[in-house]
Amino acid sequence: MTERTILGLSGNVKKPSRTASLVEAIVFAAAERIGASRHTIELVSAAPVLFKALRADQLDAQGREIIDAVEVADILVVGSPVYRASYTGALKHLFDLVDYRALTGKRVILAATGGTPLHGLMTEHQLRPLFGFFNALTLPTAIYATEADFTGYDISNPAVHERIERAVSELAQVLSTTDQTAATRVPGHRPALVAASA
Image (tube, rainbow, N blue to C red; front, side):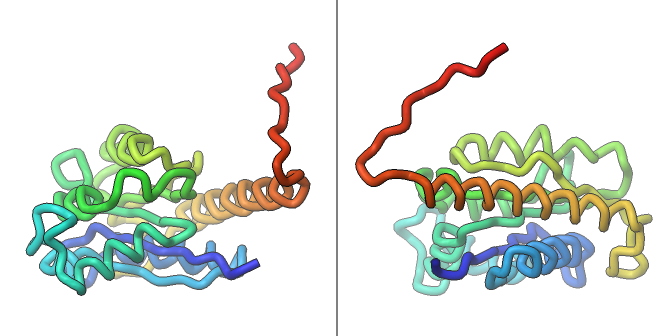
C-alpha cells in the first residue's frame, strides 16, 4: 500500500501565526501516528497566487499546483483564525477553486483559533458544513484554541494537546476500519445492507 499523504491548510493571513502552529502540530501528530508524509500550506503565502484566478480554469501553473495538492491529499487538516464569526476569505477562495467532486470521502480534521472561547463553535457552524458540501468525512473532534492557550506561538495548554490526540486517535480508528473493510471485500461482490438490531 502506498504511503498516505496529509496536507495541512492554514487560513492565516499574517505571519507568524498561532493558527499555522496549531495546524502544523495536528499534521505532525497525525503523520507520526499513521505513518504518512506531510506538508502544510499557509494562505498568507498561497492566497496572492490563488487570487490571480477567480475560477479554476484561470489558475496559472503555481496556483494549479496548490489546488492539485488539496485534491490529491488523502487527509486534510484545515484550520483558520476566526474572522467575523467565520473562516478567512482567503481559505474560502481556495475551496471555491477546488473541484466539487475531489474531496468525496476524504478525511478532514478541523481546527480554529480565536481571541475568546465565544468563537469556539465556528468549526461546527462554518467549517463542518463546508466539507459537508464536498461530501468529505470530518472527524468528530475539532480543535479550537485561544491566545491564552499559547506561549508566543507555541501551544502550551495541555488541554489543546489532549484534543489533538483525540482527533488523531479518531483518524487512526477510521483509517483502520477502512483498511480492514477493503482487505475483506470480495472483488465484484456488493455487500448486502443489514438492518441494525434494536
